[in-house]
Image (cartoon, rainbow, N blue to C red):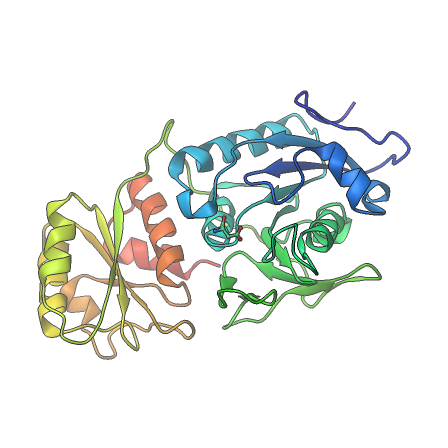
Length: 327
Ligand code: ASP
């Protein structure tokens, strides 16, 4: 039998695939039974079971919930309980959770995050269609080996590239540097690229949270060293600069970052721009100052990766740089 104890629901007439639906946050459906009532046809996609890991707005996402999610998904993988996992999640930090999972899960199984931009009471609520699409992606064999995915508004994104780009639009998730990796709707599921042939080794999680502290510092005009110095004082083990342009900042801030790096704080330069690469040694002397750059990763994802790297003892700027370069 497939599925989980906790208010699990089984559809025995669907023989082959099973999807576990994990609610990090529910958006109008309080349990799996609601799915079958309100989302027409979803019961034809897979045997669906459900678990609730937490029920918080994703603005409150934290290491504890992340560790619980990983534990639950790993159990499902180890016990071969399901063929895919769907996680309902608030959209605000969905890209961070997706990227975190991408770095710590070592599986071919589809893991799909989904949310909604409109409340369930809205005219044209997008939750039901998004959840249907996510179930469809998670239960499809062609979704295997593609890493952690985000599905909203008929569009499939890879965890590394996706970001929330609009405060209110249903077309908020985009992958500015790479584009979506596929599309899904009630009629079809199309991936635009072949599945990745090789999987990067997963980073290890410590036995218990929290992960090492990494702060993001937002660069701006008229900036001095204070924010960087404050981060070091409050014990940041790593700092991600959400820099201007190509990950740059004022002389005061860059000097303070160099001093922090000298003290062993790991410094990664990213950008506040929203798209494009941050390249090494163009305007800032990374080799000399001991910095790494985030390449295509935005500041919030760079922070996630840096926490994990520091937790795995990877703090040398060259090794950090290499890890950022891995797809
Ligand atoms: N603030 C909400 C959250 O991220 C927005 C949403 O549900 O999408 O949880």
